Length: 217
Image (cartoon, rainbow, N blue to C red; front, side):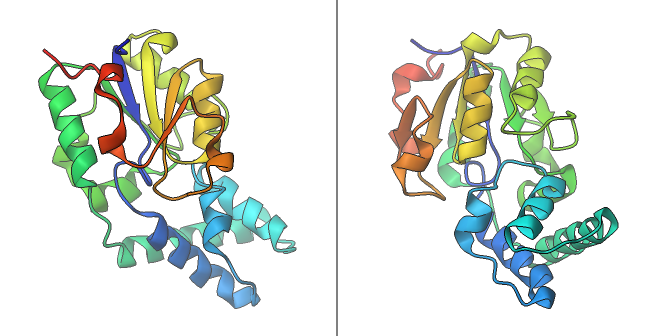
């Protein structure tokens, strides 16, 4: 069956941003002489930065106040926006354009804030989406279903009629908890065991079966 609406995660799906996020987190935590690994960020991806910074501090044994965590988060965002060279994944961009031309309801559902999206996509690309749910749009972020449920509500489409394209364990859990069909891309995590909650795991956008997507007029 083809689903009525398609919901996209951003980091690792629309754009390959993770290496720049990792680098920025590494820089802000280097002052504490702790090492942030790629997988530390890959497994936390999907949450808002205010949750990631707390999780990283706890994981590394750092006892920091909320004010200190907020300062680290602000510093990280500034560094990321300075260093990022990420751009829209051509395959994803082509699929989004095709779906838009077929009047398919589209949503972008991300733990990132708008300030992190625009330097990568530009404003014109974001206008292709009928709904954009950023990390500050709901009280509970991924892995809770709230961001995906809000997206479905804004699209006026039942959750069961939505297909989600994700790449992170927390995002996959959020989509499945929302009652949506979830495809996991192996763009940032190769270990399929970590993506096992998804309904389908594929190597890339190009590997998604066309029968699942409302791409035919």
